[in-house]
Image (cartoon, rainbow, N blue to C red):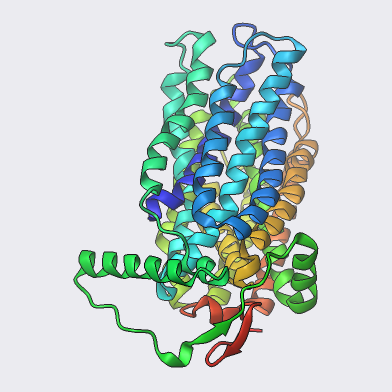
Length: 466
């Protein structure tokens, strides 16, 4: 189930990395011959697609269920990414087709986020929910590492330029076919079923899950304490206006926490990731250098953070670990800024510094997604994820432009500009850490109903979490 659900992050990491490295080659006359500006817009169109997809499918996921969205959003991503490889010509119609396919692929992945994170939280046992969600979110970087490794031989010149970039964009759709078969065995969320008046179906899903656990592990699943029983009355799906009222009137502190965590991590990641190659070429390697090899250790460091630190978010605690990873990432980035200004870094040591910083930042960023998916009521969970994801992407989209401006041109890169860009990113992450320390929710080991009482509860014996 973890493999089937975590695959959406792998696909996104793969798509972003391929687009970042393949995109710059599309300006060549032997490929599409589009302008550098047109290439730059590819990432923007993809991100816009993610925002639209998250908002649209977040609403649909709360209305139609998690499982149906698994297949709908994956099919949309498959179609968009596969069609990108069939872009022909260099005219206005071809460029429009290219942008449309990137938008569609982004919409599919954005829709995945809302459904997948909801399903993970609703299906994983409370003592393991934090580490599972964080590791699954961290698999984004496994996808980035896969893409970085594959694209080195793929774009080495051994394959015709007319085909190499097309094959790169087909890697994701091929993986999507495999993922479809994995997802066939994932059940619908019993929580979603019971909240929509489908009691018999929820019981059937629970029996299936308990049977799988007992068959696989040999352990008996004890009945839930009757003191945890709640009585609900299914209510119609809430729209986004209702959601905003719930978020900022009923849960103002939690909404502030979710927004700050998502915005700060999105700003830092978009700023560093999309300026990664620029920094390496402008300050260390020269304009003609191939930077793709440097993405591999960066991606590995980002994946190891959630993988190795994930369990601590369940044992040490959410507030402590989120605040700690954000603050530590910010402090390490300040140290890196001064080392860069002192001129003691080179391409290798700069990459090592980024790996260490994002080892911690990646775990914190994954925990931001965990936070916004578990601290709000069941009925609006997918839409809440979508809203905070959209907010984060909007702010994150500004970061690459700001960093590019502060770094300066290839002919005249600004050392002081990059120094202050690093300081800015560090301060933003530190702000996120302070907000997490003050407003963080101790959700570790707790049932979702104990963290946030469902909106449809009529009578509750053992739930809390206002």
